[in-house]
Amino acid sequence: MKDIISWVLRHVPRKYLQLVSHFGVKVLSVFYRGKGVECSVCGSEFRKFLPYGRSGRDNALCPNCLSLERHRLMYLYLQRKTPFFKANLKLLHVAPEYCFIDRFEKMKNLDYITADIESPLAKVKMDIHQIPFEANTFDVAFCNHVMEHVDDDIKAMSELHRVLKPGGWAIIQSPQDWSRADTFEDPTITDPKEREKHYWQDDHLRLFGRDYGKRLEKAGFKVTEDRFVMNELTPEEVKRFALPANEVIYFCQK
Image 1: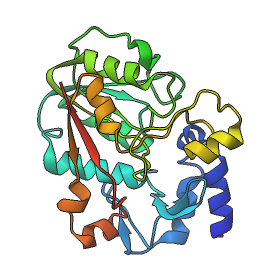
Image 2: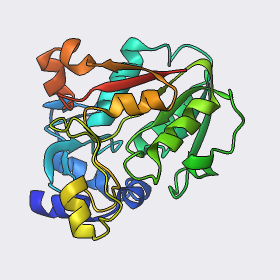
Image 3: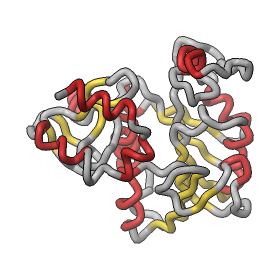
C-alpha cells in the first residue's frame, strides 16, 4: 500500500493533486488512523502522515488538508511569533497552498488575494517578475517554493518588496543546500535529468545555498534568519507535528 501511495504522490503534479484531494487523497486517511502525529494546520491526528515527494519521504503529507512539513512549521510560526491571526492585514499569497486557502479566506481580519502564473487555485493570474499591483499595497506576502522556479529570483524578490507597505513583512521560503556557501545556477543546464541532478528537481532553475538570506537582502529586504524550529520548539513538538528540523524561517521586512 505504501508503495502505491508513494508512486501516486510522487508522479501526480501537486497542483492537480490539490484539486482532487477531496476525492482521492482523503480516502487514504482510513489507512492512517491513529494518534501518532498531529497536523498543526487542520488539527487532524493520524498514526503517521502519508509519504510524499520524488524520494517518497516518509511521514510528510497530511491526508486531510495536504499540508507538508514546511506548511505545518509555517503555521506554527504564524501563530506563535506574528500578529497574523489578530491584526487587520492585506495579504498577497503567491502560489497559494491548498492547506491554507480556505482557512485564510475565512479569517475576517484578512483582505486575502491569491496569485500565480499557472496555479488553478489562484484567483489572480500574474507573472511574479511584474506583479500587477501598485507599490505599498500589502501588509504581508507569502511566497514559498517559487524562487527556485523563476527566471530572475532577485527581480521576483524585488517585486514582492515593492508591493509591500513600509513596515510590511513577508515569508519567502525556498529549498536550500546547506552544504553550499553560494547559490548554484547554470543556464546551460537544460536537460531534465541534469537539472534534477544539480537542482534536486527538473523544473528548478537554481539551488540556493547559505547565501539565500543575502539574496533576499539584495532585493531590499531586512532579513531575519529565524531558527524557530531548532531554538524554540521542543523535540516532542518537532516529532508530533513532523516538522523539518533544520529549516530556517526567512522573515523579510520592508
